[in-house]
Image 1 (cartoon, rainbow, N blue to C red):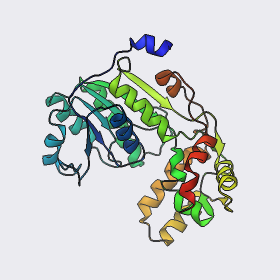
Image 2: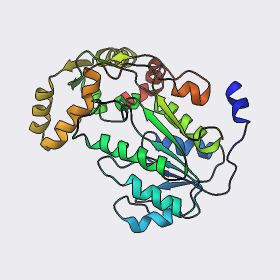
Image 3: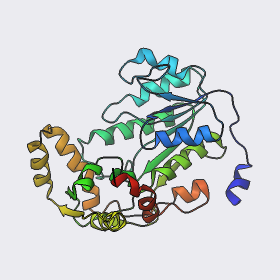
Length: 291
């Protein structure tokens, strides 16, 4: 209730559509669902949408932004397109932007110098802060949904997750919490100029996370720690381009180096509650591992 009192129960009540880029992804799809459940008008930005939106075709940006008052902005990893997009949004009258960034943006040595996602987030955060638009930045830890919807799912189904994460731990955040914070920032007052570091309620090693999934599903699943070199060799042997394999290994390295285990307070600050626990995520996602 303190949070609601602090925000004065003020919400962004508008007939203008809220644009959601990445609206079919892990966080974006949940933002869309939550906004629609509240009765908010939503425009999902995608190449197959109406109007169509393509990051690589700037002629589609204006129609996607037309009449929009607020944007949930999921950047295109590996590209420096957030800045020109935000600049155009400001020119077209957008008043509020909630940017999905990433953990470690402001931590020296968190990502390698060549990490393409890191460069995207660093420039994106700078762009929204300089835009003149009211902004909120979300910096989530590793998504818990990577095990059920993302890059780890096939390995989980195959029964063996092989990563260069060592015995490091990560405070995996549920995408439902990311979406809840995003929707609050899009529709409530009081979130302007806030950077929310988002994590789960505890840190787990990859082995511990896999064990929880194994016990919940009854599937035999194990974690196999690899060295970065072994990992890159395996991926290139499967046909991955070397640069992409090395970037993936670098993205995992903060877990191995003990930089992802801390618990962040962003969910509490934004929503006035604790984040969902990894066990609750596993219970909710258990059917996805039985397909």
